[in-house]
Image (cartoon, rainbow, N blue to C red; front, side, top):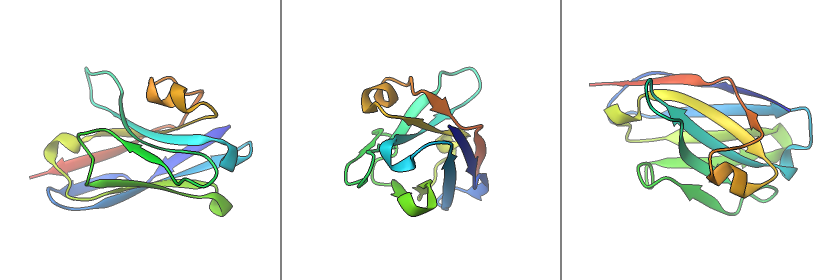
Length: 123
């Protein structure tokens, strides 16, 4: 499995960005997908997850609930993270991840990681 994340950049507080992550190497719809983020000197933290197949169920960290939306497009093998009302503290490298176990994603231990994309929020 390979994951290719993109869409990061520089944005002002209150702005929006959409991250994308393209999945390849296996059957996308059979994988739960997640987004994580990391700042220097801190552990990688969970941001959001979406269940496999229908994507009908999503989970968010409290810090992003109501501002971020995770979605998947199975025909395009892509998972998205729409980030709205961005805050300075959202600045981080964002990683997408995949696992056939949702539990593994929830404990920050998915089988597959993307390469990361930098998001910088400025005042």
